[in-house]
Length: 195
Image 1: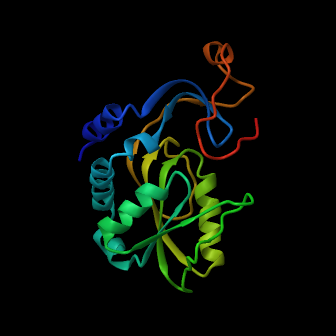
Image 2 (image 1 turned 90 degrees about the vertical axis):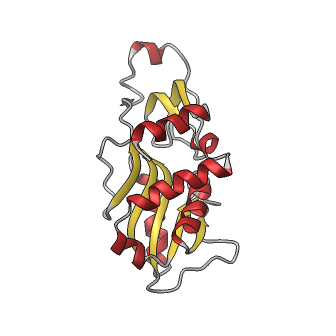
């Protein structure tokens, strides 16, 4: 699946939004990818996960014991990546602000993990999720994501395999262009922002 086909999936699901958005990083953008919309079709989610799994090097795929994804955004694509790779998939939650395992999920010490996200902007959520995996004794081999919107700037500390890279401009709250400053920002993500 090439980049044009991937973006066609997002457009078909009306998942590429335009307006004034406050991202989970606290930065602002005129564009937002609502991955939940692109993943609401099980068939489409499966196609995207297979395409993402195909981006992973063969030797890496052979090492993965478990897929771990942060809720909410990574939950569906993490599950589908588990299916595509033939391994179990679990998720982390933030009931009190920090990622943790719940629902009887466990990571065995030494278990080799692929972290899977929907969108990476700054990498903060990914780094926090990796910290939680390591605290449980897991070894994070790499991260895969549907979308890298960090312009290649996200520092994850492990190899990173995005399905597509989109470099929409993002702005600090005190440096908004006039067209964004003129309208209130919407917080479409699942994480509370400090704005």
